Image 1 (cartoon, rainbow over the protein chains, first blue to last red):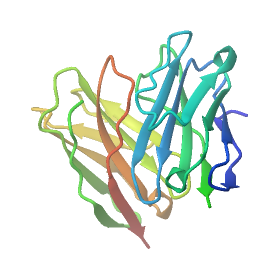
Image 2: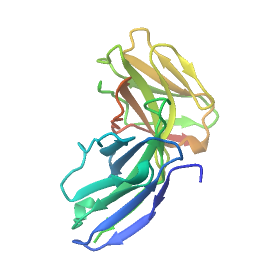
Image 3: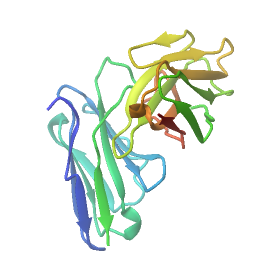
Image 4: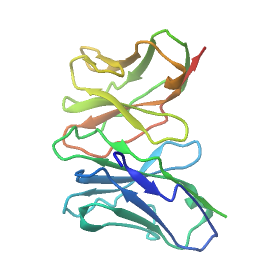
Length: 115
Length: 110
């Protein structure tokens, strides 16, 4: 597709389970971001990938959170041993090299509910 | 990046211009002003950005004061589909980490 694609769109899981959220960025975009948005809150930066550089993981809230980006394209955000406070919409965004630095293209998000 | 301040909410009438203010009194010379919006249940959408000069595109106009301490996003003819949360963000030219605050919830009324 033409836009950023995220899956699943909705995920309900039990406390303590691991979850994986997937992001397919726009083809050719070298930068990829993950943000989190809790109910009624603003967006919280989680992690940033740019090409082959080491990712900026400064926003990951705990060591239960990790992300990887394979082949410079698809990214997976993994949350281990989920907690109820992890319930949120997880948003992925991408941007292109040489484009406007702050012009991010966001996906629709993956809504995670931890019971 | 500089802190931005926006009113929490505003209403506007359909078909009229919507003027959304943003204060960024501590902005530095190399920080751009970006505007995004987030329609309910969607990801944020880039609208426009600027440094010093006023900017216009197919979505909106951005007016930045001469001292760069504030700016206004103008939606020239608001429609019901413009109802959204609008975020004003200051970002250095060499930075990549957009920080989204609470934004302004804009409700366009028929």
